[in-house]
Image 1 (cartoon, rainbow, N blue to C red):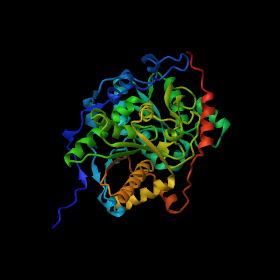
Image 2: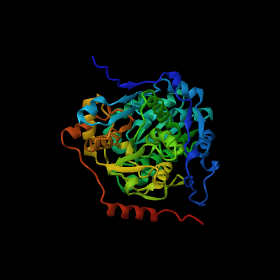
Image 3: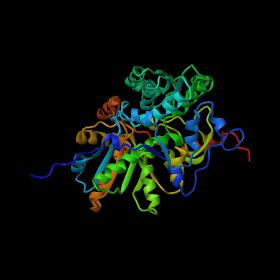
Image 4: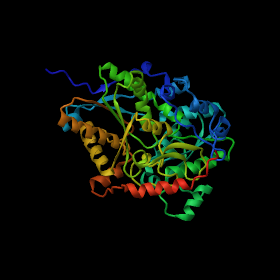
Length: 461
């Protein structure tokens, strides 16, 4: 009889990484620092202390290669980590490709996505600093769910502003956040000045991540017992997510595989950075020999492929420092696509810098292409992907089909960063033929970005 196929590559709990990896230590050139919008100077710890604890501020700026994971965080991680690495045998067979496709499945976490990898340490460090409440935004609801779960582990209150388009489309995400103990508001709301301003100009606004960030930051900055927690974009968030890539390296070594291509969905950059940064370390240390690394973003919010690399605010109201990133303009309101976690106007400064340095590639995919790939994945691998990772699945399928034409036996790795069990109305829309594709004309989008950037404050010096 033939040998049975090996579908899962597993690590034991005692093989879980005990350090996060900081890609800043190995970059040929450092990314430009965040700037204070009033002075034009790099922000210092005192500029961030109103909303972040000092431990996270230190992680944001450190150039140390590794940061130890606290034992208290490891104990919570072990509820689901290490996560499994799967070989997509059935997807490969359905495509008829010679490629070998692997996916790191983060949907096994309590929240059903990769987001608890950073929510847990953020809650831990805030509780350690004596903070009693965390505020945050959420798009698809996965980050808000993760932070509500993490706050429950460390006896913190959690208040979430959920982008209105997702609040209306994903009621079970709200219920899950409330089950974990969180308080959830639709954004824009009438609870903040940022929300009231948007409602006054557009009472039917679908909201955006940038606006929800403004509301959460506004509330945290006014309460000395509260801090703000961010689910993507910043260095310390991507740092925490590198546990994904570190595990994947160990798992691939168990089966003797070397990766040719890594694809990851990209909104703010946390899932993408978490999977790829440890592989980028190996590639840089090997003098550039290693996998092609490809970011995949929605065609309706294409910050890498069509945005401008410039300093911009991370939120609509201009409450954050100025970040050097690929941006569509901080007041850009993306179309209400189902991949709510990718509807962000900017890209992580770290990911943006890697793109500028030519260390990664980027492509954009439409909703219909992504859901077609998601349905194929569900019918072959048995997991319904969240709308966000369908972008990476679609790019992996594209490459696997190219391998049919070329005969190459490439090894493709992706991160299935969450399941879509609470996103089934989106699949219903696709299956019924009601899904709308949203794309931007290059000229129209570039004009919109240019206009948004002219509204930024002048940076002295």
